Length: 291
Image (cartoon, rainbow, N blue to C red; front, side):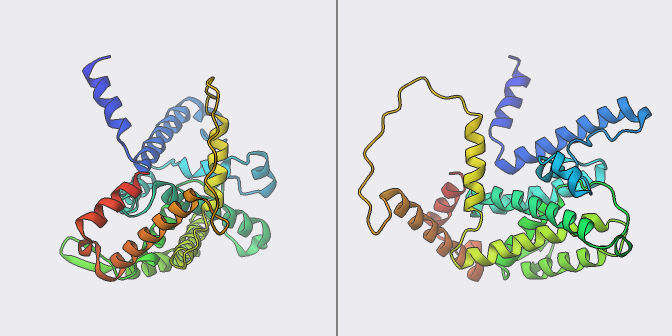
């Protein structure tokens, strides 16, 4: 292995979960560009098997597209904008929230955005909507993360050069632009954006109450992932489970206490800002975000 290959492999190994998603999006974009050069003469969409069809029954024939459409971009500016925003919002997410929770918000945003798109174009009368094609782009997932942050800690400030803006102002601006976009040529995309926005808002509001609505989705994706893991030939030794207390075992209590500590720290950030945290609190959040 050459030094360049080793450096590249090392860099890829240390990417956070969203940086890996960005890398996949770029790879899919390049693949689509190459395929488009090959098959453009026959008028077929290069990544049509990943797009979310407008028609509900067509979507049923390719159920994976409810997620894969979020990895498809045909325009370079579309890709650049989505990945640019995802990169910067992910830096906040991975430092403040567990990776699993952040991924749940992102992918649930994509799914809800896709479902909103299908609902509008299969339920609403055709004369009330603009003609649209299949749905592509990561915007629903990106918007879900943005609105989640803006809702969870609305008074935290983001700095643009010398200007400081409270996050809830940014959240309102995003919603207004997407509502206005419903009356433009990208109506289908804006419908999906608003689906992601609703998911991000609802997720944050429930999490502030102590309810993580993405737990079920996370367990489902874990089961899917386990289907593709190679089973160890070694015999599994089952340890005796700790005795339950009030219907919960030691591990469940540990998880509950960890989440409560995270919630308290995030509440402190929401009220006083990230800089108000102690060194120990920052270290705890960093460790929790990488679990």
